[in-house]
Image (tube, rainbow, N blue to C red):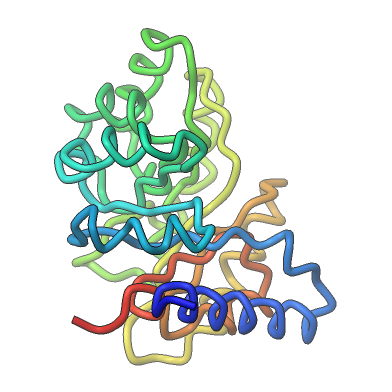
Length: 219
């Protein structure tokens, strides 16, 4: 097996183990390989090992490498997991299958226009600033109901919530809060958990985990 295949197998096994502990099915959890800042040649070994879901932070970077990679492997699913500027909404709708960072009114309106123009809608997640951190993107917990209502009124279907817990703090309470918010608003998907805490996230209800270092190796 290649290094990429070994790393992928290890992460998949860890997800399966965490799912089993939580009495969940591993097949219900989507592993997103965070390929931001990695060149196409670093991504291809993971594709060859069978990985199909990938996450990028920036529209411009994704535009530079994914058209070629998707021409080679058409069934790749591309997720935008970084902040999205409203003026990039049209490009994002054209390129990505899922957008995890819907977090404000202006972006809801820009995405609604872009989806209407394109005649299609990516899977959408509202990003919640779960730790109320000033430096982080995401909708404040108190503003979530209004943003979800605005999205619905604009014709957007929100599939789930996304969050990044504060660094260097036990993440489980934050994952539990996101799970509770998703349940309260009848949203089926929860995008939470990264390389350092994805196993905990799986036990707390994550449906999508975003893993970079554990799949691509340290730089």
